[in-house]
Length: 290
Image (cartoon, rainbow, N blue to C red; front, side):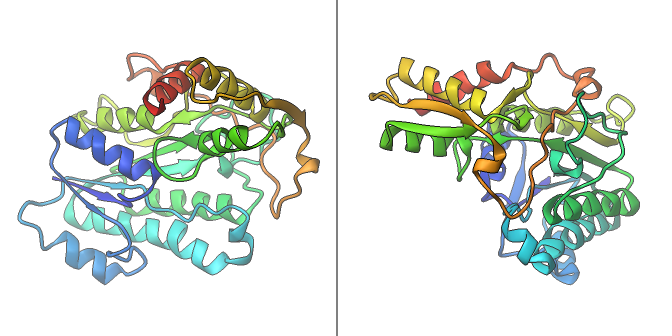
């Protein structure tokens, strides 16, 4: 039995569908089980007809700018909540899969970040996610931490949905061209998680930190241009919209985003058949969207 924590989020909903399609038994919870309450987590985990063999934690505080003024709540969810879930997993003998972020790095490198590279978050969101990783590895050695980036999918607010809406509303828009990363379709990340769940022998895929994104590195502007191109071809967009590059300075934010947050996926590639290219996955997503 699998416990999916945060089943109502963008990734949680995608993963719920993937678990059903894979015929894997799971229980999904969201805010009805408070992850900052250790007793509530333990009570739920120990009152099941079948014991949980896996816990997947998709719950997180993800409002990057808001986090700067909401430090306590952000830390409660991303650090304390993650630690609590790891403690429960250890207590009941379950393996843990936890989702983390590229924001644990400062974005000052010019080559893809490896799992063992030093972390240096530049905002509260990244700091609390980094601290959550540390707590998890301290509390439950049977843990997989998957760092991902630029996540988009069918559910919830994300860059692709925002671009499609704006492109339908405006004749032109400007998109940041000085931040580089790798988009990730929630469907592809869910497939990776299913692969981990099916790896009964941890000697095949050792516990620890892994990076996963779709292949390729682009800017947000590049991403927007390809969204427009593919959406026009699929008749999702029926009017012209000019997409222009701009700098991060043109869109002041509470917290600075990493300028370069490409993640090196070599480690996890050893256990996967292939990782789709970012534009290939975008095409798959938009085809379903259409």
